[in-house]
Length: 224
Image 1 (cartoon, helix red, strand yellow):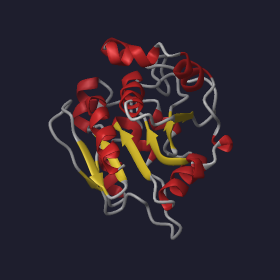
Image 2 (image 1 turned 60 degrees about the vertical axis):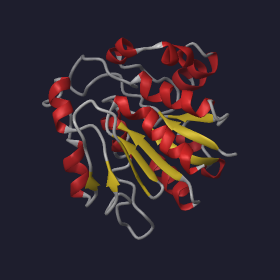
Image 3 (image 1 turned 90 degrees about the horizontal axis):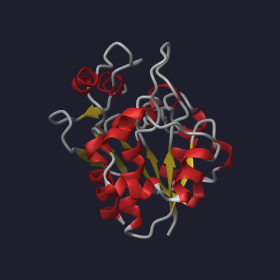
Image 4 (image 1 turned 180 degrees about the horizontal axis):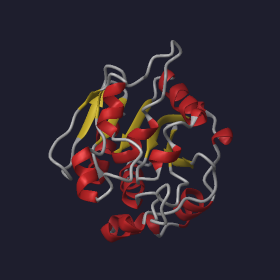
């Protein structure tokens, strides 16, 4: 069984501010917990490689399952301290790529062509592209070999404008996920704020918010 490649952010603060952001811990840990139950291995990559900061607000939502992953030496070492650089990744080793969230990804996922190429290669090899919450940023600018946006015509979801309002980040984020997705002709789906919701369209599976991680993972595992 091939591995799953998990993408983390390197961004430590909201642009133009001193407010800390980073990886939303549960969006990685809960996904890994689901895969662990099926003995599926993971690797970690980030746009710059190396250190991955944690969004401090995500630490308020730790439960025993998230803590279990957080206490694993391999997660800390490979997923937070020494993530791989995109240049170190061979897409043929992976059956899926999973874009985690945390607001930081809006600044370093969206235009990272190296990771976009990795995702496209995995997808073209009958693999899956997965995301949750702000991780949708990693999907927005992936284009196929004809130059079309890969999300065009596909049902996807991500963190909504209402959820940004409730998070107090309306004036901080560089774009709104639904608007950006619809500008690329995606069919953006959503449900009530902060409720579990995941969408599968072919080999693309996306989740709306931090409460949708396990739903994304389970939809992917059903495919296996």
